[in-house]
Length: 120
Length: 110
Image 1 (tube, rainbow over the protein chains, first blue to last red):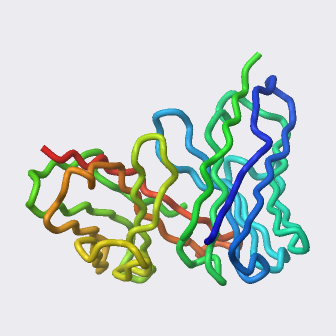
Image 2: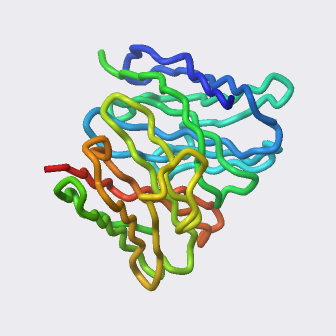
């Protein structure tokens, strides 16, 4: 069974940093693109970043470019998102999602999410 | 950047058919994916590549995509279908590709 589990969320002050992690299991992690999608309270889904299966190609939403870094460790089936210079508008539930072999493919599995709250 | 437009809400009686539209410039040229999200839960993929269903998704869910509009159709609507629905595409038109989501449609079963 495909499983994704995020961790690393919490309460952070504005300007702070945080690293989110996602552990994948039940599938060949090395073969699939992975993405981070966030959802602010009461709002819709917002894609923030994606990474190819090999990790050679990374993609970012314009709203987070330069502040977020995505990476993966295929030897450990782990996906990470480093968030710097946190702002109040980064407050959201962050989901890790499994893509297909190409970035154009659907996000066919999602983790339960980890909450990030930015407040002083 | 590429924009997907969905109606904020759709209402339908049980047993009827719900249609949720997703508008985008020449969206018919892109594979469209649809997700269902119930309160407090992660999204679930219900239709991919315009009109394919993942295993375990009822055949009451179907999709179409042509011109500037993609549509998710839910036949014989049940109370359990009440949820938010999001359409999604990959926009590779720029040097930096992006996943794009529509704003979401709240389906209310009357």
